[in-house]
Amino acid sequence: MNVLMLLVILVVFGILLNFANKVTMIRGKRTYWIIGTYISVLFIAVALYFTILNKDDSRRGDINAHEIPNLEQVIYENKSIEEFEPYLTKQQQLHYNNDELHINSAEVDYTNTPILIERKSADDFIDVSIYQTPNVVEGIDVTDYEALSVTLIDEVMLILLDDYRELHLDVYKNDFPIRQFTGEKIFEDDHFSFSRPTQLIHLSIPEHIELTMDENAYVHYTSE
Amino acid sequence: MMSLSTIKLFQVVKKQYNFKLKANIGLFNSLIILQLFGILFSLGGTGQMGGSFYNLSFYTADYMIIFTMIWAFAIAFQLTTKDYRNAEFIFVTNRLGSDLSNVLFLLTASIIGAVTALLSGYLSKVIVYFAFKKEIINVAQPLTIKPLIYGLSATVLFIFVFSLLGYFFGAIVQLNRVFMILLPILFIGFLLIAARAGEDSLLIILFEFYFQEFSFPVFLIKMIVTSLLLFTGFTLITNRQEVK
Image 1 (cartoon, rainbow over the protein chains, first blue to last red):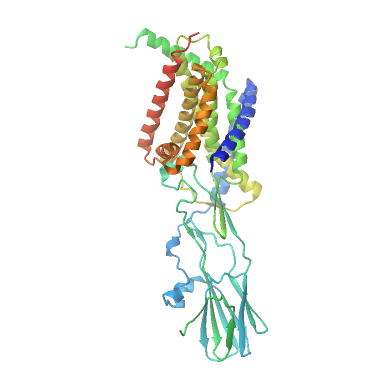
Image 2 (cartoon, rainbow over the protein chains, first blue to last red):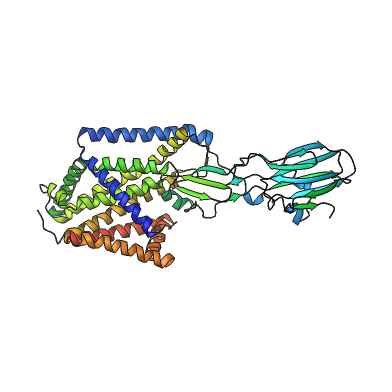
């Protein structure tokens, strides 16, 4: 925050304070009524918070974001895809009997979405498995969008990012004088635990099909 | 054994304190207004954090606490003005008695301000939940008795020290009206220097000294020492002023 911004805030606050000062002229029983009503509203809010919000909608998590693997380990560390079974979110078998196939995509960030291709003996099916790790914020799984979808249109395999949207979360924290002594973070960006979801597409394609694809596609063959 | 003058001072302070609580009750209206503004401003979140594909909004009572601190500063400043000092003329025997009763009033105001500020955080969360139907995750550590007492005490102390600071500046201004212009200029200059100096600025050092002290006993000592210094400061100044 620069100084100018701070000064603007101070001026705005001065106007507010001036306005607030005018209400100090209200005296006598009316003041007691105002204060009493305000405190009653605050207590009702506390009761509502602990009976409804804190029970049903607030979630505290204990998922360790560091324990969630990066699916790229399949490629970089030659890990077996079976190790990532818990993150298998979708499986499909697509009927396909042409000799050529072009892999194309829409809205897929190839830098983060590897395509692992495994060649299999000839048949008329392409097996598609989609893996996705969860989106974890402060130990809570907040995954908000579906995995990728894969469809066949003529000789093109189209990979689409389903229902992608920016993740927006509303987070309750303790107030700063409390955070100061609980070891919680004072500032928002102070080592906030956040795990970005990673995705991987595993394709089992009959070996006779000749493949072409987007030049940016992040493809890896298991036979390599 | 307590001396007669001590007993007299104690009684005068007690009478003045009771009088000031009743006479200044209207000041709490402005506290409510400012906290309601704080709630209004915090409905959009009191902090943001974002990346290329995510955005987090944080909900706390931080704005309400900060507004209450500034309110405490402002009302303490007001207490030093002539209008307020004239209102207490029927009680005053000396400046110390007046200052002590004002400090007690400010402490009471700080406790009320701290409790309502912390509770207003729940009001803003309830409004956000019911009015905007937002899905909310709670990353706050569950409050047990110890952090609750520490947090509440820290809030009271922050507000109280700010009120003493307001009283101190008020006393300086009453000493000479030139300070009414000089103090804001010095404050703005201080901010400008702080902005240039970056992390080495006195503002940051002071901020870290009070707001990043994670040991409660040490924090308590810092706040008590600061309060005593401010108290000594303004009693020295106000003692030079006339007694009604």
